[in-house]
Image (cartoon, rainbow, N blue to C red; front, side, top):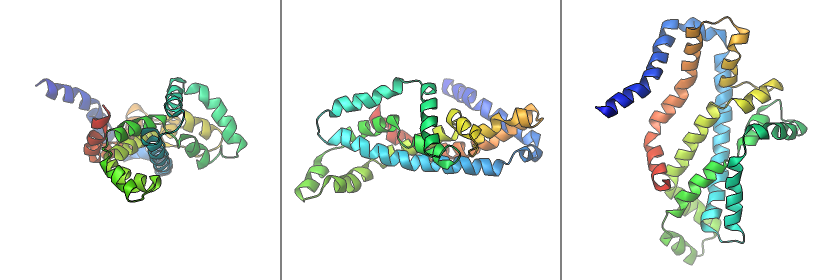
Length: 239
């Protein structure tokens, strides 16, 4: 009974948002170029997910399986960057991207997010739980590290890779601060930035804004429902 009540409390705000969105009607969605904003968010989120999965998997394999001088200290140095507040990195990142001429395009939105320290940590912990028997057998057959990574590690790590992809997509879809900085420089706007500009651009009521927010939430909600089993399987060995 407690679980049912807890679930009801968690789902109630989302159901209320959907109810208000349906009551507001489709006219609220005409206030913004919602299709273009959703497309921009999708391009950015998918591109970042591909980059994060690729870079995190390769870096995590190196930290979990390869032996080289300073490996553990380098990994701790990577983890220490998580303690730096994001706001402190906004100005240096913008100056770097602006100097490269990417501040007003997709390059500015995507390039700074292609490496995820959290993703490296997550996959490293997962790789450490995998048995080494198949890897040792592959080495005896003459396989190199790249072959072992691509044909042995990656197939076993699909749940963890799917989990990282899901977390990365959700994070990028709801990202606001950096897309706002890029948008102020003339770059493309994402859904979150477009919704933030509603109050200053249009005289929309509260229900109209909720209707637009509900539409922007649909892709993330659908993805979470579809990929929930992979998320559970991917997180279990890392806990």
